Image 1: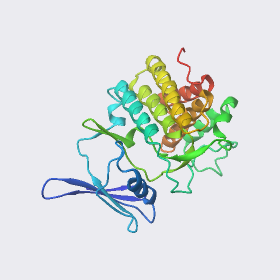
Image 2: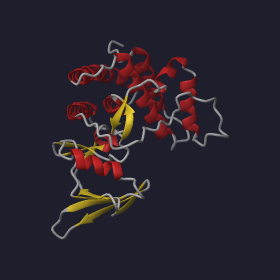
Image 3: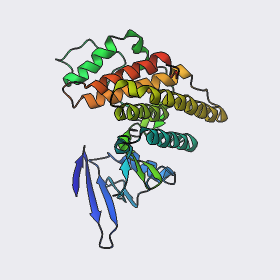
Image 4: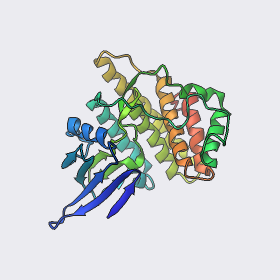
Length: 290
């Protein structure tokens, strides 16, 4: 099986003994950061170790997990399970404290720090993307979350989303480390919390059904922030405040919505629910009593 994934080429190779492998080749140095992450921290429980890496050829070969399911698929049936899995992953990421100074890249945001006046002649995006920008512009209180100038930066996965986390039997793996870059401190943990909120909203058929799930996720989010701050204190670093962390979660949600909006003509009803959730998280700082 051959798949073109962005600028990368993916091949599934089946051996005569029945074993299957995923062959991934980049276009230039696309996989350089991913290869270095595997070389340095490949023993982490949430990393699927490769069996072959060649940085010069930009090639990575990993076991192909045919029977694994992404959290994107699992979320359709059990948002509660996804929340628990992401909480486990977030704690593993905190415990591992991956901070490899191997890249000068920074996370690229779709929504700029200072959202411009809508100008379709200079921004080649879909109608849905402009709907997201219009939502942000109509809420002046949201502007604070898009300015990362004063945030502490550290290395992060930077592409943590539901379809990049897979469950194989009882093992949870975070895939696709090729965008490993510098991001605001706590970004990957905020991404886990944001993904929990996305999972809960997608399982619900109507907006009112999301409320009980959201209260649970807000509680998990506050608990994960406490867990992260305890580790920061143990390393002599300044902690992250609740508003700061809430802004990261909100920013993640807006970025995910904007990313998917690039491939849509118009936002759907649940997209609008997610926008409201993102605004709520930003304004109410993960309060769980609403």
